[in-house]
Length: 340
Image (cartoon, rainbow, N blue to C red):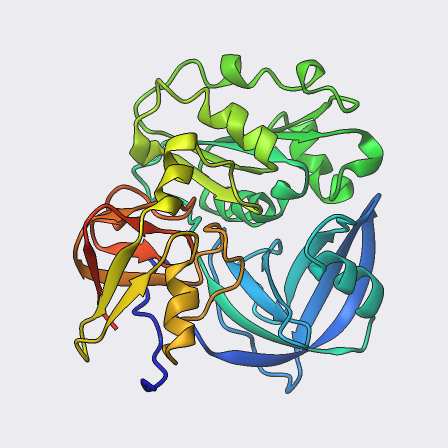
């Protein structure tokens, strides 16, 4: 059996430079009901020391025991290192993480976390205007973004789309920005046609504008279908569930291929309908993973040779020249050589 190895991780372009596998003990100092089915959790370091610094758009992994780990965006001001704040929507039909957070996590409880990591960072000063589109619980990374943008004096606008006021988190915190016209609320009552007109909102692009979008799959599909006028470098997205793959992308599941481990020369067959990461794990090569559907960024791995089929929602076009998400990617080439 091969020795256990860790994936070669893509470096972030932000201040979030803590090791990928670094873990921290925290205490839940506060739990607040932010809206219907949404709780926020404030975490403080168990030893009283500052937590690692982070930038807007960063997330942490919360470890809930029995192998259950979930990724949550940090929604407090990035200048705060005495605490982290996350918000969790209860999803009865989810994979169990949100139910565990709502039902098992209470004030005073100890939680192990890892991170922060960031695949959804704000662009630099080249961004002259930031347009933020938040759907439901997708507002969480935006809360840190508006704090960072406000402090830097950079212009922005945020459209926050929810079903109803009762399901709209952080209303008190957002009120000054709503009153100033920087944040606009849209309640659709469950009918997206009565909410924000996303195609019209994204119809025009002006140089210097950058778009940030986060929300459920239907919301993100509407965004993706409306950014034809926007250059790829100006569109930033974060998913909290897997997007629906095209029929062409699904078809690659039927094609087997091989992966080669650069450090040992070992070659493994990846059968139809098996993931790279599951085959590697079977042979004792451990690449950390979480969502296993291509949207969390945990399993990003450097590849050296071959042509991957990218089916994730994390990597941009420049990343895809060097990195692959081994939980969901396939390969057009016969062999894909991984830098492991």
